[in-house]
Length: 231
Image (cartoon, rainbow, N blue to C red; front, top):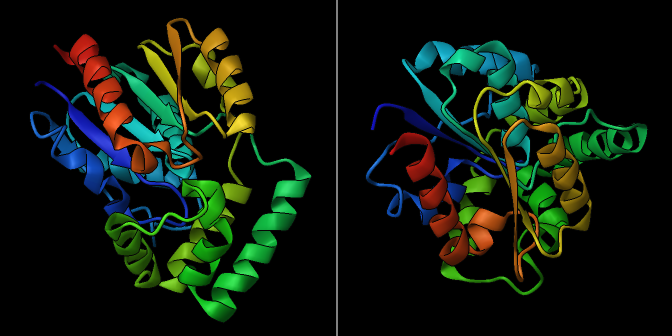
C-alpha cells in the first residue's frame, strides 16, 4: 500500500490493545511497536521509530501514542501520508496533570502497572467492562516492566506542546473521540480547526480508549481514512 501504518498504544496499555484492529487492517503494512522502556523523552521515542521504519507513514496514536505521533510529525512531516489521534491532543501537561502523574509514578513503583490500570479502567473503557478482550488487556498490562511504565509517565510530564505541528501538517488529520470523553472532544475540536485538513469523528457510547471499546465503529472509520490517504 506504499506506507507503514504505525499503531501507537495508550498509557498504561501495551501493544496488545490493538488486537481488535489487526484483522480489519490486515490489508496494510501495520506495525504495533511498544513504547515501554524507550526512555523518558517522547521526542526520543519518535526518533527511534523513524529510524526503525522506512518510507512513508500513517501514525495512528491512542492517547499517549498520539503524543508520539505528533512528535513524529514534527520531525518528519515529509514522510506522513495521514495522521490519526484517538482520544488524544496536542497540549502539554498542565500543573494538575503533573500532580496526577507523580502520584501514578509512586503507585506503579509500589504496586505495579496493573494497580495503575485499575484506577483508570472505568474512565478508559467504561465501568463493568469484563469481556475476554478486556481481561487479556489487563493481563498484558500486569506483565509490563514497572520502570518502563514509569519512564512513560516521566516522558509525558516533559512533552512539548505540539499545536504548531498541527497547524502546519502536510497531510490529513483525523481526530476520533469517545462520546463520554468530554475533555478530549473539546481538545479535538480545536485540533481539527487548527489543521489545514482536519476531521473529527465522535463515537457513540465510547470512553477514552475508543478503538478498544468500540472497534465495530472505529475499524470502519480507520479503513475509510486509510483508503483516502493511501488508496
